[in-house]
Amino acid sequence: MATGLNNLAALLNAEGRYAEAEPHLKTGAGHRREDAGPGSPPHCPTLNNLAELYFVQGRYGEAEPLYGRGLAIKEKALGPEHPDVATGLNNLAALYRARHQYPESEALLRRALAIREKTLGRITLKRRRVSTI
Image 1 (cartoon, rainbow, N blue to C red):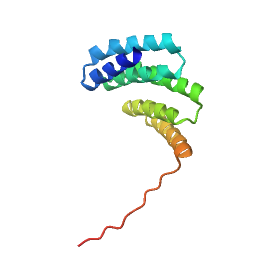
Image 2 (cartoon, rainbow, N blue to C red):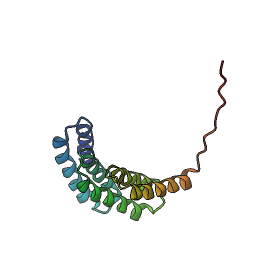
Image 3 (cartoon, rainbow, N blue to C red):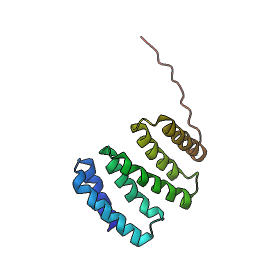
């Protein structure tokens, strides 16, 4: 049930129907807590989507603890260098960037990049020579 509520809320959020989306996310979060426990990774998508709902509305003070809780759950369950942790870091960094907390945002983005480079390898871009006529 939580997945269905989460998906419906994500659609409503994308349509800008925030007041309709919020109760679905809160209900879904409650179901996930009951099913998997409040500190388990299945709880993270609903936390993240509720945080995103608040973020797009500029409700940063409400979004930050949700992003932080989701990140903490992922770090504990998956380890500090898991790619899902990098995603959580990016989400929190976006919030800090929106609040003009640039040093905090940069630190999180650098950590996320290091995780991705370690797990996925360093990506190098090759320059192609373009001929002109």
